Image (cartoon, rainbow, N blue to C red; front, side):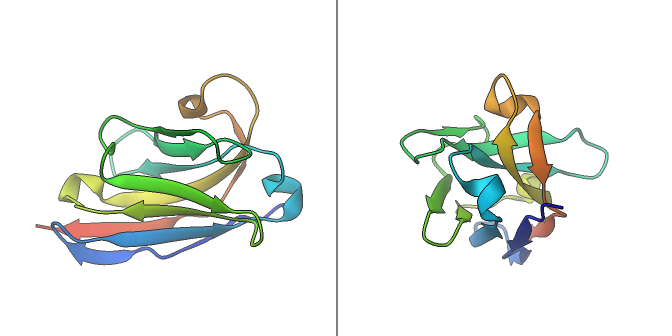
Length: 123
């Protein structure tokens, strides 16, 4: 069974920053697209960002471009999401994902999902 372990969520005020981390087993991490999704109460799950297997390409939802940065560290089998200028609209459960099965990164077709880490931004 593959476990992705997220950390770094928390509560911040409007305009604050957080850095999410996700550690994955080598079977899920190596040579696979990694990413982050989020879901707020009453809203659909949405793709936030993704990074290609070798880190040469990254992808972002329009709503987070210029504020969020995704990165990966192959020495730690980890992917990170640095979030700046947070707003209450960024609040939600953030999920680490690994191994894109098919199609676009934001279609939700990832093989592995973490349990999520909560991000709450207060106004």
